[in-house]
View (cartoon, rainbow, N blue to C red):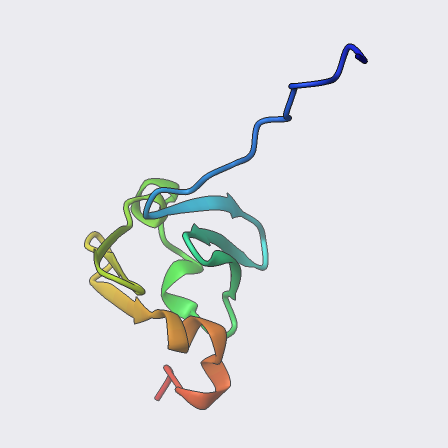
Length: 89
């Protein structure tokens, strides 16, 4: 028996939704179905938002994410395919 038998590295499990990272180009959103990058060019509301406002996100219904401080709500289909759902006018 090796010293590693029975040992598993911890896995990151997301319950709901969380912002995993904010970069100069966009935000990384971690949800149950995976991790998604939201570039500021496609999601401009986040570009000038405070870190606290970006991190304040909830999932009121499955695959629907809401940032109350920014009054932004996005569905997972919009996040996955932003060009299909133009968000800027």
